[in-house]
Amino acid sequence: MLTAISRYGARVLPNTQQIIAECQRRGELVRGPKIKEFEETFARRLGRGRAISASFGRMAFYYILKALGLPPGSEVILPALTFWVVPELARVAGLKPVFADVDPATFNLDPEALERAITPKTRAVVPTHLFGLPCDLDEILSMAHRHSLFVIEDCAHTLGATYRGRPVGTFGDAAFFSFQTLKPLNTYGGGMALVQDSGLAQRVADLAAAEPWPDEKRILGRLRVGRLQRIFTRPGVFTVSAFPILWIASWFKARPDVYLWESIRPLSPLPEEYAEKYSNVQAALGLAGLDSLDQWTELTRAHARLMNETLRDLPGVRIPEVPPDRSHVYYQYCVYVPDRDDLVRRCIRKGIDIETLHVDVCTRLPLFGEACHESPGAEMAATVVQVPVYAGLSDPQVAQIANRVRSVLTRAAQRSISVPRASHQ
Image (cartoon, rainbow, N blue to C red; front, side, top):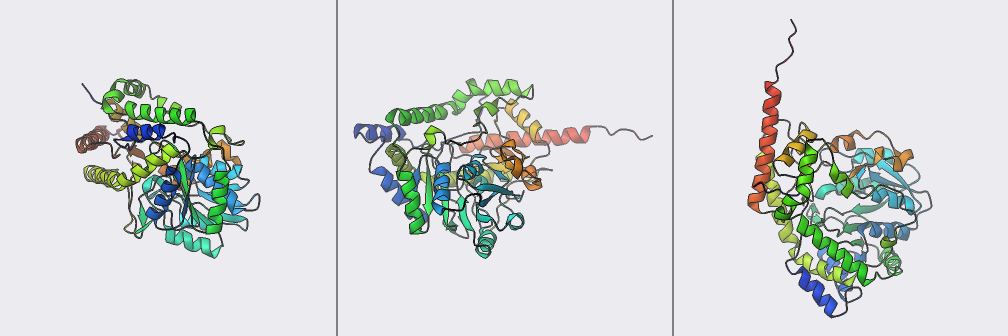
């Protein structure tokens, strides 16, 4: 019987349920000492700044923007390729999102495009370290300094990555991290702001502290959903649950996975679940997760190396580029292929679930109508496929994925060669 492998895999502590049970026993699911301990440990690990927890990584970003006290209508430059929620929250904060194109080789903000996007109204730039690879920070920081811009690093994908040997998140005025279930550090939701200036950090902390505490029912529900996600992405369960739907859909060129995505919509007023504090049980999971972060990252990098070795020599295939001054954590392993949609369909039929795009080309979303423009780098980057290399996979599973992807690509190349050319007689 074919055993299928999901595109998604969460980083899970083996003693997750024990940590949750201990917090319950102490009556510390929602409030408790682990929140402060997690914040302090997180900041020490990064080496500088003050860490402030939040209900979501996106809310950490929102607090940073509000704490900066920028004039209403100030422009904030973001990459054209990013998660739509980030620029939308800039708009909710009373600011104007402006998009600059990305470098399709690294998927990150193109410094030349950033320079072209700066106007007298620009007050901040948000370099997004996409898919786990840091931006060209020297160029971006130099430009920001010349134009007196605040720099807010989007590190949702990149906890554990470095630029010139230094952790991402420590270069700008502030940074934000996400702890959503599939992120490098999983606390079943939540996020963190890391702020360098003590005055700005205190204003961010005051905004986070002003939110109400969530109730236990909401937190337990979040943990329950996270557990179900873990169960349903295990190969044995995935094979008999979601995979048959994807397999059938592959024959009809349908995309049932789009129903799993968060709907793109205005976020003003903020959804109720956004405006709440981070919980103690999530912080306890985060503290324990930090001890395993390096191990998880190294496993993922080893899987990416195996994928590189298997795919690098195939015609029309372009594996991820990693400049020598950066380290990649491979939140997503993105590869250019000759025919993305054909590869996705044929891999599904071989039991390998791969993804087409994990973020958004914001310059083509109606939500940002007046900010839409041509962004060829982002459009090109949107043609990649994302192949599973996550830490929860075993080495044999990664080898199986790599070999099946290679097989599909090789046969596709052979078919294209064998197609007879039209006669010109």
